[in-house]
Figure (cartoon, rainbow, N blue to C red):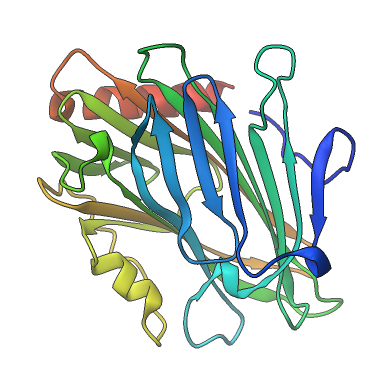
Length: 275
Protein backbone atom coordinates (compact mmCIF):
# COMPACT_ATOMS: atom_id res chain seq x y z
CA UNK A 1 0.00 0.00 0.00
CA UNK A 2 1.27 3.45 -0.88
CA UNK A 3 1.75 5.79 2.06
CA UNK A 4 -0.28 8.96 2.00
CA UNK A 5 1.51 11.85 0.35
CA UNK A 6 2.05 14.91 2.52
CA UNK A 7 1.81 18.41 1.09
CA UNK A 8 5.11 19.60 -0.35
CA UNK A 9 5.66 22.38 -2.89
CA UNK A 10 8.49 20.67 -4.81
CA UNK A 11 7.59 19.60 -8.37
CA UNK A 12 3.95 20.50 -7.78
CA UNK A 13 1.37 23.20 -8.39
CA UNK A 14 0.23 24.55 -5.02
CA UNK A 15 -2.63 26.93 -4.28
CA UNK A 16 -3.39 28.46 -0.88
CA UNK A 17 -6.93 29.23 0.27
CA UNK A 18 -6.55 32.98 -0.09
CA UNK A 19 -5.89 32.59 -3.81
CA UNK A 20 -8.71 30.16 -4.62
CA UNK A 21 -11.47 31.25 -6.96
CA UNK A 22 -15.15 30.58 -6.29
CA UNK A 23 -15.08 27.37 -8.33
CA UNK A 24 -12.12 25.03 -8.60
CA UNK A 25 -11.77 22.23 -11.16
CA UNK A 26 -8.74 19.99 -11.52
CA UNK A 27 -8.28 17.30 -14.16
CA UNK A 28 -5.88 14.38 -13.77
CA UNK A 29 -4.54 12.56 -16.84
CA UNK A 30 -2.70 9.28 -17.30
CA UNK A 31 -2.58 6.98 -20.33
CA UNK A 32 -6.01 6.94 -21.97
CA UNK A 33 -7.83 8.06 -18.79
CA UNK A 34 -8.72 11.39 -17.20
CA UNK A 35 -10.57 12.34 -14.01
CA UNK A 36 -12.09 15.72 -13.13
CA UNK A 37 -12.61 17.00 -9.58
CA UNK A 38 -14.66 19.99 -8.43
CA UNK A 39 -12.96 20.53 -5.09
CA UNK A 40 -15.28 23.15 -3.60
CA UNK A 41 -18.71 22.06 -4.85
CA UNK A 42 -20.78 18.96 -4.07
CA UNK A 43 -20.32 17.82 -7.68
CA UNK A 44 -17.01 16.40 -6.44
CA UNK A 45 -15.54 14.02 -8.98
CA UNK A 46 -17.94 14.22 -11.91
CA UNK A 47 -15.77 12.72 -14.66
CA UNK A 48 -13.71 9.57 -15.09
CA UNK A 49 -13.09 9.26 -18.82
CA UNK A 50 -11.60 6.18 -20.46
CA UNK A 51 -11.05 6.43 -24.21
CA UNK A 52 -13.36 9.45 -24.26
CA UNK A 53 -16.32 7.85 -22.44
CA UNK A 54 -17.26 9.25 -19.03
CA UNK A 55 -17.88 6.51 -16.44
CA UNK A 56 -18.58 8.75 -13.39
CA UNK A 57 -21.59 10.89 -12.52
CA UNK A 58 -20.64 11.88 -8.97
CA UNK A 59 -18.28 10.85 -6.21
CA UNK A 60 -18.08 12.99 -3.09
CA UNK A 61 -17.78 12.95 0.69
CA UNK A 62 -19.90 14.03 3.65
CA UNK A 63 -18.91 14.35 7.31
CA UNK A 64 -20.65 14.65 10.68
CA UNK A 65 -18.54 15.61 13.70
CA UNK A 66 -19.22 16.07 17.40
CA UNK A 67 -22.64 17.62 18.02
CA UNK A 68 -23.42 18.29 14.33
CA UNK A 69 -27.11 17.69 13.65
CA UNK A 70 -26.69 16.72 9.99
CA UNK A 71 -24.12 15.51 7.47
CA UNK A 72 -22.16 18.28 5.74
CA UNK A 73 -20.56 18.01 2.31
CA UNK A 74 -16.77 18.19 2.33
CA UNK A 75 -16.85 21.34 0.20
CA UNK A 76 -18.63 23.23 3.02
CA UNK A 77 -15.32 23.14 4.93
CA UNK A 78 -12.58 25.71 4.36
CA UNK A 79 -10.43 24.61 1.42
CA UNK A 80 -7.01 25.48 2.77
CA UNK A 81 -4.56 24.12 0.19
CA UNK A 82 -4.53 22.28 -3.15
CA UNK A 83 -1.60 20.50 -4.74
CA UNK A 84 -1.49 18.76 -8.12
CA UNK A 85 1.52 16.64 -9.05
CA UNK A 86 2.99 14.57 -11.87
CA UNK A 87 4.21 11.38 -10.20
CA UNK A 88 5.48 9.65 -13.36
CA UNK A 89 7.05 12.46 -15.46
CA UNK A 90 9.37 10.19 -17.44
CA UNK A 91 6.57 8.00 -18.81
CA UNK A 92 3.60 10.34 -19.05
CA UNK A 93 4.53 13.98 -18.24
CA UNK A 94 0.98 14.93 -17.15
CA UNK A 95 -0.52 15.77 -13.76
CA UNK A 96 -1.92 12.56 -12.26
CA UNK A 97 -2.24 13.23 -8.50
CA UNK A 98 -4.41 15.71 -6.62
CA UNK A 99 -4.23 16.49 -2.89
CA UNK A 100 -6.61 18.86 -1.12
CA UNK A 101 -6.56 19.97 2.52
CA UNK A 102 -9.82 21.04 4.18
CA UNK A 103 -10.38 22.33 7.71
CA UNK A 104 -13.43 22.93 9.85
CA UNK A 105 -14.30 26.63 10.22
CA UNK A 106 -14.13 26.23 13.99
CA UNK A 107 -10.75 24.45 13.79
CA UNK A 108 -12.17 21.26 15.28
CA UNK A 109 -10.74 18.97 12.59
CA UNK A 110 -9.10 18.74 9.17
CA UNK A 111 -9.59 16.39 6.20
CA UNK A 112 -6.74 15.67 3.78
CA UNK A 113 -7.65 13.98 0.48
CA UNK A 114 -5.31 12.41 -2.08
CA UNK A 115 -6.24 10.93 -5.49
CA UNK A 116 -3.90 9.23 -7.99
CA UNK A 117 -5.05 8.19 -11.48
CA UNK A 118 -3.60 5.44 -13.67
CA UNK A 119 -4.84 4.73 -17.20
CA UNK A 120 -4.26 2.10 -19.85
CA UNK A 121 -3.07 2.27 -23.46
CA UNK A 122 -5.04 2.51 -26.69
CA UNK A 123 -8.27 0.53 -26.66
CA UNK A 124 -7.54 -0.86 -23.18
CA UNK A 125 -10.62 -0.08 -21.04
CA UNK A 126 -8.83 -0.49 -17.70
CA UNK A 127 -8.15 2.39 -15.31
CA UNK A 128 -7.30 2.63 -11.62
CA UNK A 129 -7.91 5.40 -9.07
CA UNK A 130 -6.31 5.18 -5.63
CA UNK A 131 -7.79 7.38 -2.92
CA UNK A 132 -6.55 8.21 0.56
CA UNK A 133 -8.25 10.38 3.18
CA UNK A 134 -6.90 11.45 6.55
CA UNK A 135 -9.27 12.93 9.16
CA UNK A 136 -7.53 14.62 12.12
CA UNK A 137 -8.87 15.96 15.41
CA UNK A 138 -7.29 19.44 15.50
CA UNK A 139 -8.48 20.29 18.99
CA UNK A 140 -6.01 20.69 21.83
CA UNK A 141 -8.35 18.96 24.27
CA UNK A 142 -11.39 16.70 24.12
CA UNK A 143 -12.21 13.62 22.03
CA UNK A 144 -14.25 14.15 18.86
CA UNK A 145 -16.67 11.65 17.31
CA UNK A 146 -17.00 11.38 13.53
CA UNK A 147 -19.18 9.80 10.88
CA UNK A 148 -17.55 10.06 7.46
CA UNK A 149 -19.35 9.11 4.22
CA UNK A 150 -18.26 8.33 0.67
CA UNK A 151 -21.00 8.49 -2.00
CA UNK A 152 -20.50 7.09 -5.52
CA UNK A 153 -22.84 7.24 -8.53
CA UNK A 154 -21.11 5.71 -11.57
CA UNK A 155 -22.50 5.66 -15.11
CA UNK A 156 -20.58 2.79 -16.71
CA UNK A 157 -20.35 2.94 -20.51
CA UNK A 158 -21.67 6.51 -20.23
CA UNK A 159 -25.15 5.18 -19.39
CA UNK A 160 -26.98 5.98 -16.13
CA UNK A 161 -28.71 2.58 -16.10
CA UNK A 162 -26.30 -0.20 -15.11
CA UNK A 163 -26.84 -3.94 -14.86
CA UNK A 164 -26.17 -4.65 -11.21
CA UNK A 165 -24.48 -3.50 -7.99
CA UNK A 166 -23.45 -5.46 -4.90
CA UNK A 167 -21.42 -4.72 -1.78
CA UNK A 168 -19.24 -7.66 -0.77
CA UNK A 169 -17.87 -8.31 2.72
CA UNK A 170 -18.91 -4.80 3.75
CA UNK A 171 -15.89 -3.24 2.03
CA UNK A 172 -15.99 -4.00 -1.73
CA UNK A 173 -18.51 -2.24 -4.02
CA UNK A 174 -18.79 -4.00 -7.39
CA UNK A 175 -20.89 -2.63 -10.26
CA UNK A 176 -21.42 -3.86 -13.84
CA UNK A 177 -22.81 -2.68 -17.16
CA UNK A 178 -22.55 -5.62 -19.54
CA UNK A 179 -18.90 -6.67 -19.69
CA UNK A 180 -17.62 -3.40 -18.16
CA UNK A 181 -17.11 -3.79 -14.42
CA UNK A 182 -16.03 -1.39 -11.67
CA UNK A 183 -14.93 -2.36 -8.17
CA UNK A 184 -13.80 -0.33 -5.19
CA UNK A 185 -12.03 -2.06 -2.31
CA UNK A 186 -11.44 -0.39 1.04
CA UNK A 187 -7.88 -1.35 1.96
CA UNK A 188 -7.57 0.25 5.39
CA UNK A 189 -10.19 1.70 7.70
CA UNK A 190 -12.95 -0.90 7.41
CA UNK A 191 -16.36 0.77 6.93
CA UNK A 192 -18.80 0.68 9.82
CA UNK A 193 -21.83 0.72 7.53
CA UNK A 194 -22.66 0.62 3.81
CA UNK A 195 -25.58 0.84 1.40
CA UNK A 196 -26.44 0.00 -2.20
CA UNK A 197 -29.60 1.53 -3.68
CA UNK A 198 -31.23 3.10 -6.69
CA UNK A 199 -30.64 6.84 -6.99
CA UNK A 200 -31.40 9.24 -5.40
CA UNK A 201 -32.09 7.29 -2.18
CA UNK A 202 -28.63 7.65 -0.58
CA UNK A 203 -28.00 11.19 -1.79
CA UNK A 204 -31.30 12.29 -0.24
CA UNK A 205 -30.17 10.84 3.10
CA UNK A 206 -26.87 12.73 3.02
CA UNK A 207 -28.44 16.02 1.96
CA UNK A 208 -31.40 16.14 4.33
CA UNK A 209 -31.36 18.29 7.46
CA UNK A 210 -31.09 15.48 10.00
CA UNK A 211 -28.67 12.82 11.25
CA UNK A 212 -28.65 9.81 8.89
CA UNK A 213 -26.90 6.44 8.85
CA UNK A 214 -26.56 3.91 6.04
CA UNK A 215 -28.80 0.84 6.11
CA UNK A 216 -26.26 -1.99 5.46
CA UNK A 217 -28.26 -3.00 2.37
CA UNK A 218 -25.73 -4.94 0.28
CA UNK A 219 -27.85 -5.60 -2.80
CA UNK A 220 -27.86 -6.85 -5.47
CA UNK A 221 -29.50 -3.72 -6.88
CA UNK A 222 -30.37 -3.15 -10.52
CA UNK A 223 -30.80 -2.93 -13.37
CA UNK A 224 -31.24 0.81 -13.11
CA UNK A 225 -29.49 3.98 -12.00
CA UNK A 226 -27.61 2.59 -9.00
CA UNK A 227 -25.40 4.23 -6.36
CA UNK A 228 -23.56 3.13 -3.25
CA UNK A 229 -21.96 4.55 -0.14
CA UNK A 230 -19.65 3.64 2.75
CA UNK A 231 -19.79 5.07 6.27
CA UNK A 232 -16.98 5.18 8.83
CA UNK A 233 -17.74 5.88 12.53
CA UNK A 234 -14.82 6.60 14.85
CA UNK A 235 -13.63 8.72 17.78
CA UNK A 236 -10.34 10.64 17.78
CA UNK A 237 -8.34 12.02 20.68
CA UNK A 238 -6.71 15.47 20.26
CA UNK A 239 -4.10 15.32 17.49
CA UNK A 240 -5.12 11.78 16.47
CA UNK A 241 -5.87 10.85 12.84
CA UNK A 242 -7.99 8.22 11.07
CA UNK A 243 -6.76 6.98 7.67
CA UNK A 244 -8.98 5.62 4.90
CA UNK A 245 -7.24 4.00 1.91
CA UNK A 246 -9.24 2.78 -1.10
CA UNK A 247 -8.66 1.53 -4.63
CA UNK A 248 -11.21 1.88 -7.44
CA UNK A 249 -10.79 0.06 -10.77
CA UNK A 250 -12.69 -0.16 -14.06
CA UNK A 251 -12.06 -3.22 -16.27
CA UNK A 252 -13.48 -4.88 -19.35
CA UNK A 253 -14.02 -8.57 -18.56
CA UNK A 254 -14.79 -11.40 -21.01
CA UNK A 255 -17.60 -12.88 -18.92
CA UNK A 256 -20.98 -11.15 -18.53
CA UNK A 257 -20.58 -8.35 -16.02
CA UNK A 258 -23.13 -9.61 -13.51
CA UNK A 259 -21.37 -12.99 -13.32
CA UNK A 260 -17.93 -11.40 -13.03
CA UNK A 261 -18.73 -9.01 -10.18
CA UNK A 262 -17.77 -11.35 -7.36
CA UNK A 263 -14.54 -12.39 -9.03
CA UNK A 264 -13.19 -8.92 -9.82
CA UNK A 265 -14.30 -7.45 -6.51
CA UNK A 266 -12.69 -10.13 -4.39
CA UNK A 267 -9.57 -10.20 -6.59
CA UNK A 268 -9.10 -6.44 -6.23
CA UNK A 269 -9.65 -6.65 -2.48
CA UNK A 270 -7.10 -9.44 -2.09
CA UNK A 271 -4.53 -7.70 -4.29
CA UNK A 272 -4.72 -4.41 -2.41
CA UNK A 273 -4.50 -6.16 0.96
CA UNK A 274 -1.22 -7.78 -0.13
CA UNK A 275 0.23 -4.47 -1.42
